[in-house]
Image (cartoon, rainbow over all chains, first blue to last red; front, side, top):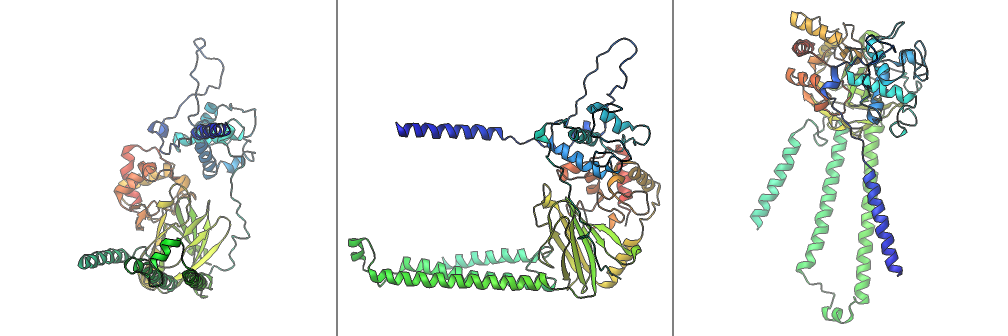
Length: 178
Length: 344
């Protein structure tokens, strides 16, 4: 009796372990952007409620990188590479408005953010359309949304992995070359 | 039996030596004093441990063909255990063997540490050429330091050094831990974020030496290589003078169009071409791209075809790398490649 129950326990825990392993599915990383993501700029976001010709339903525009951890981290990298941080700091805002907030002037939905990046906005936001590929715009959108907790927690790091560069250790006392 | 064994041995030796003949990236083909010490250590380890291996194998094989004198097989069969005499003998042999093994291992540690100190720990001579090497995922930024700011040179993935001059490498990292390793010249030195690590070497003969990132650093760690080109000091000086110049202005309509393509696309956000408005810092400096041996950190030979492929679809050549797939019209590609390959 004892042995049978132990065998049962073993079999049960084995099955549980296998089913747990099945849950460990890695996120599929699409490293190579699909051709459609490279250059086609969507024109999706509306900034007005009304339109001529009666109400029309508009297809919702979703970020293709929603909940994609790789895309969010790539967006974070691009945020500093393309010097978004030059005006927006790390999302807190400086010369430019903060990006961690609820009340967006031009809308905070993915489609609005996409439009803001592609078209630019008055008073200083440059238009990035035609300069950077579309998939990178979406990666930036994914990252900015993650700043506001609009991405699943499972895809967002708990802290930003910025590397501290200590100027003390980067200082060279002698650099003479001729 | 014997001729065949000799033949296979000779074959193995030939294969081994043909491996040595490829000297671009080999610790046992040293081109510098420290690499020589490392090579001596390597050969010493090989000889000593090879001899021990042969000895142990001989001891293991010998009893298969020779009956032991001291054991009576019938007595063994009866009692199923060796006599006290045999036990004592065995104990002595195992004790001696263990003692000698421990001593040899300790001696090897001492020799390794001494060689490590000699190669890595020593101060470089005062008159040295200081070069900052910054590892990034997955390429190397190379900066020739100079007190005269107009003679500071930034390039990428290729280091030119004069033969016989001490070169001090100041290693930095932009993201994760990388490791700088030119096997023909020196041992490994990790490049650590927010730290400066140093090592120095001296190329004793001209040549091209391949280096490789030696610390796993992400998806494209394997395709993070660089070349060190050691050349006589007059050729090095000529190289340096050319590199210090800003990029040549495009002279043909084709390359002029290519420059416009470069400047009007995303290229400028990451790359610098001195003499133009492109001043991005995130990717390799392209001011004298055409003078380099390779593109994409040693991944491809620097040819127009490879460059066109790399620009069009970098993610299929080096999946996961940080070069953007930039939308280009097909008629823009050829002028762009022609322009970049004109940057001598």
